[in-house]
Length: 199
Image (cartoon, helix red, strand yellow):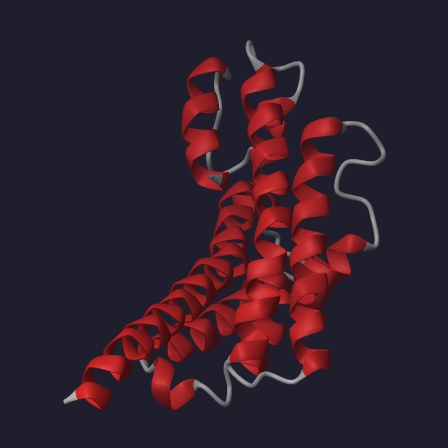
């Protein structure tokens, strides 16, 4: 949803440059139709909120401890709140992107790796993709802080933001896929059990 909305909104932003412009620029007055991005951001936030209960139940059923499952869900709520605020308060509104929930988003990839650590053998490639997302997230986050590296990344800040978004959002999809696969396997086994018992 995050990237699809941008694809829909870019044609209505004259001179949009993926290397320089951030995603949030698409919801400003510089866009001919800012409502496309803003409504899309709101929808992304609401969809993320809707996933919280499912994540919690699935993580708990896979023996993830209560605290870690709760922290993952809290991080998801931060993702949802951030997306919602991005749509409700377009740039340059002071509430746009400048809130404590950003801390929960930064911890998101770490929490997903921690939550799936015990499942790494059963999850296979999913866990290692989560670990790769975490590594990429850390690298890009550091690059986006010129005071840390001394590298001027202003000319590619828009690109870095999108790479950071991939590394930040991908764990949600990967985690959901793996947990859904687990749920489907549990359902299949429960349906097969009566047949095997009869035979």
